[in-house]
Image (cartoon, rainbow, N blue to C red):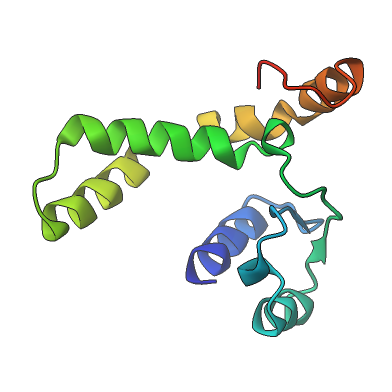
Length: 120
């Protein structure tokens, strides 16, 4: 929730108060504490099918982060933590926005493929 809280503040600074939380239906996202956190901040949750990586742009973000961290070749836990922080800070806002803007194309691709895997 700490990451989400920081992201929520950043989104609101950018002027978008109409926020919809998207998750992958993992049990940790369905916990009462998470639901309460979202409700207190007036954030709506999107109904989302389980196991739908084609529709979830966060998977692309995690892939990029993992690739960047792997490139730094951390050798211990402290190096890994540093590599994750540095890599995360290097991901630019435009990349994240491009993932968000890709949602209409993702939805169309999944509909066209009738639920079969897509290029996303």
